[in-house]
Length: 100
Image 1 (spheres, rainbow, N blue to C red):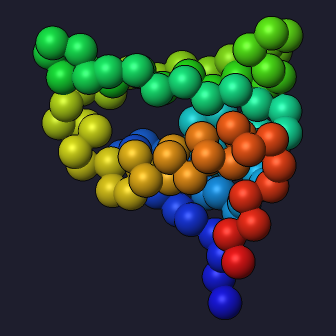
Image 2 (image 1 turned 90 degrees about the vertical axis):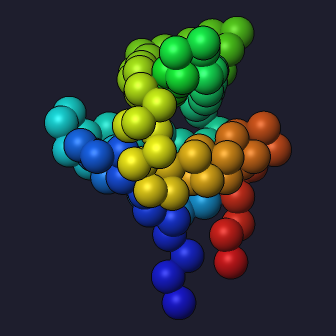
């Protein structure tokens, strides 16, 4: 049984296994749920959404990565919003998501 959740934003593949979020494509990067911060804002009045993922916690952030998506890009990003919600839940719980 495959417990990974995958999604694409059009340019990159995101994979989450309950502990590690990986982004494949330009500049691949990995984040562990116990040492990351996720922030999704929007949509703004033009429908844009911003996604920011940082190593560390909000009170002591490390390197961060940000992406802005138009409304059309967000709609085409199959499964991306759902993946981010699962990751957010895992981060907020402070432990591994346990996708089993």
